[in-house]
Image 1 (cartoon, rainbow over the protein chains, first blue to last red):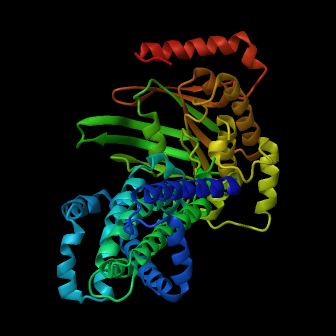
Image 2 (cartoon, rainbow over the protein chains, first blue to last red):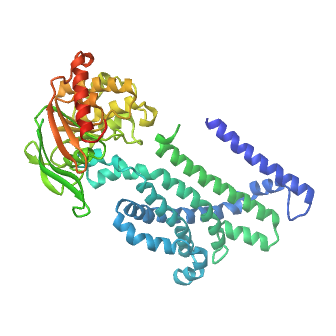
Length: 247
Length: 252
């Protein structure tokens, strides 16, 4: 099982590698270097320069994610469990959810400075709405009957939470984080082109401005691996936390 | 602790009395007996059960369990819904222990009793499975084990065997009777199968619909006897009840 998953990822990477190689051979421009050269470059400069940028990017994503979960999970739960709360909160969520968060970046940069805070707020905003909606819908989808054996024994809210609300909303919650993650990485890239000397966004844009295509591609490949790493972690969490769903 | 169930002048209405679900229901289920409630769909029998379980407030009247007003915090009320009430994210063992967990009654011998009960129910070896990996009959056994392990004061079952195929249903009725004979918990079960009511109910309550009322209460001498199940008197009694229900304009 584990082995076959590993092999399928290897095959996927190989396919991308071959297509890239083919295109670079046909186009034959420095703009699209051969993947061999990029791989060699990545190995060469990873520890020296890319690692620190990758660490900054990961930290921003982690901080934004944790913040989004801390705020979004309880909010979604309250909205899902108490219809009254949903009636008041849903309009607020629906009105703010479609606002393109990236458009607010200049405002956050003015208010929170161009440093870490505004970047983390950005990631937070991308993820939090998806978490709220997913957790709320997950809880709403629980059949009423599921609660009955607990209510009839006088279960406290904490017990209902631990036995029903938390496990029932977990799969939807994890899916929401997975979906939001890709957007979060793209937005992170964008925010990192302003007001920082660190992060994959900075590294890639800097390489681009220096017309150093090899560095740029090495950065892009590294970013892709960061994404893979994050998705891998999410899948792993799901595997252990939602065992009951596995077939 | 076994407790009687006393229902006094119970009514349930929605939309400020516009829609009456239950109208003036009075019923006593003596300590340690089984009462089967049967009636056409829409007669409010499931609502009645939910009120007795303390899951829903009545519009008027009251329910006493063991002489005290129903209160899920005070009494131990085992409620088995139609879908068995298993939590899909908990293993069989965790599901059976749910009641004991909620009531914080994990005693030294709980695990031992759990093993014995699973053996009795023929679900040993399934401890670490999840409900969706079990057959309907096995799920039902887990639901029953949960309630009997906790030794609830009363047991309330909403169409407990309806979702099972005919053969499994008869098996499960035997299983239930076997458990019940050991523990003699006061039980109310709602069903739409006449044979099930005849086999499992010492007292059979016939309900009529629109609004839900008790039409008739029958003492059932055929209760719990698997020999009599094949006898003409069983079929005769079944026909009688069916006719009574038909007269009320329902079908069962």
